[in-house]
Length: 212
Image 1: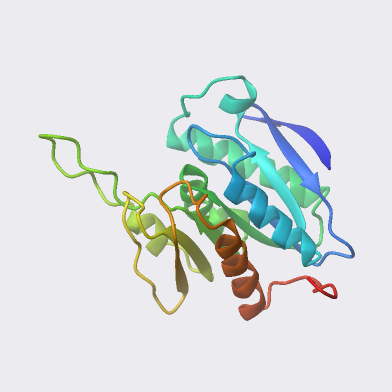
Image 2 (image 1 turned 90 degrees about the vertical axis):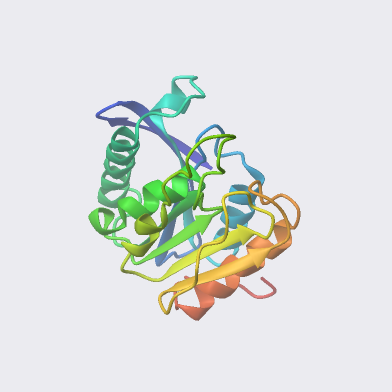
């Protein structure tokens, strides 16, 4: 594992890079709003992707690198993310096909910037579709338009008890329901299997190793 510190318009970000064996594909993943790259579902997806020969980069947003838990505004998250990916594809990930993704807030960032980063696929873990309604408050606005704007194959892995709801599947968007809530910790094996199957189905696995 190699850690890179990368300058962005909103401070330094970090990319934790694990290079695959003779990779053809790179997977770049972002964390949730209040969590980090150590989240168990992110770790499982990274493990599965790496077992397929894919180079994996886990990206820490500048606010997390600076020690803050409260997330930055969306436009700052997007700008920092695209700056990190621009750096990586010009250097460590040069020549590799790019898949982007993340969990929760990180999935939203990946969707909003998929076109700008040149991604050929998006993986969303626990996409926060509809924020739970607060007592006495109006329903929050759905984030479905962020998913609908993605024009490349997309995988959503969602807990059956996720309070943010279940996104609809489409011809381009695969939705896999797994046991659990928004944390996706109940059945990590099912999370990993969903990603492995989707990567193979859309032809994005880099190199399937024997017994993987």
